Length: 250
Image 1 (cartoon, rainbow, N blue to C red):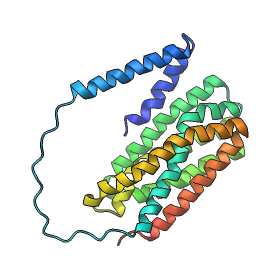
Image 2: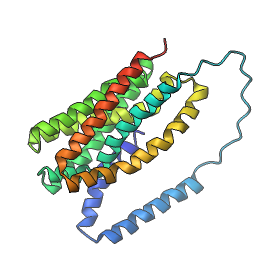
Image 3: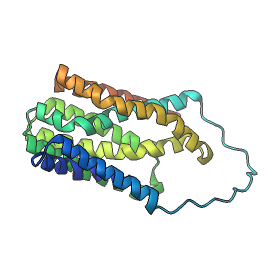
Image 4: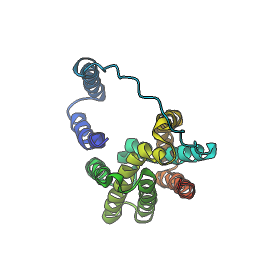
């Protein structure tokens, strides 16, 4: 997860550089070759999984499963925040350009976002057992809301854009960790994988729908519509996280 946060930092400027040298079809072929190379690493470079021994039978009663409504709250909070973060990861450069930021600067700012996100993830990782995923989300979600307000209020001013990048990067980076760890607050280890599997389908659908939905708003109405829609989603997610905190197991 830490390494994946640097993907935009590496490949946004790389793509911008390649766009100055060749056409988009060649760039797609280059990236397709990289994907095939990654697939070959998976197929040939990783050791074969070993057959694990059967775990010993449990002698204690399993923990009581949380209410079904709690699961829906967790899934909805994760999906709403993911709509914003996955959408912005795809359209951020175009959003900044539509606000009046110069193209080269927009690429640079979007690329720096990955470093800030990785730093936020690393801080959460260093926290270890001092706090859980829900606590991380309760700090990161307000940061996401604040970053969108900053961009709405100050627009393309230098201070407004830089403040947005820093605050948004911290919030989005920490939320990437919280998405994976927050269910552990409500589910024991035996139920954790099942809960994540159930969350995966709506999360993947939301993540796939976010970029075309936001870019349609950007093209059809303008950047303000994108920011307001994202602010509504982030605000709803924050409200759900507050409700979840009230349901935190003792």
